[in-house]
Amino acid sequence: MAAEADKGSTNDKGSTNDKGSTIDAGRLLGLLGLALRAGKLQVGFSAVEQAVHRGKQPLVILATDMGASQRTRAMRMEPVRGFVTGVVTGADLAASLGRNKLSIVSVCDPGFVDGIRKLG
Image (cartoon, rainbow, N blue to C red; front, side, top):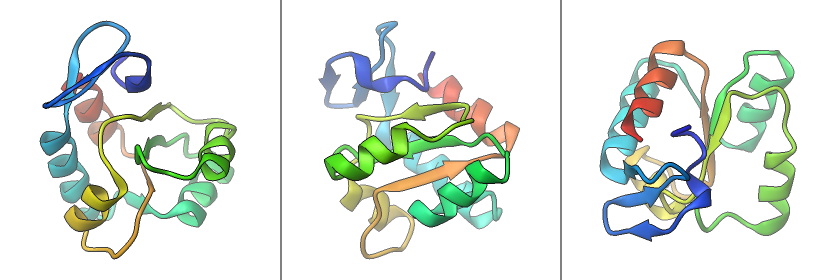
């Protein structure tokens, strides 16, 4: 599954998932920016937690340089559609979405989730 990007090795285009396909970081950031403008992106840990607790089953995107304790806490969230890890750094994520610091975002909209999954 394209959402499980943390099981393989990385290259200069993005991250390789367990099936050998790559997720292009630039295209992922572009889709996330579009989702933000459409109001379909949850930005930050508390917003992602709220979406999970409300039963929206988001696809969660984690920064590669996210802290270990926060990553463990995020990976325990249920129910979710999956996790995208090992693709973008927190600095890239924050810069593309107009924030100072950012390590986690999520998307609940089925169209954007399908688009992200098709990247890999």
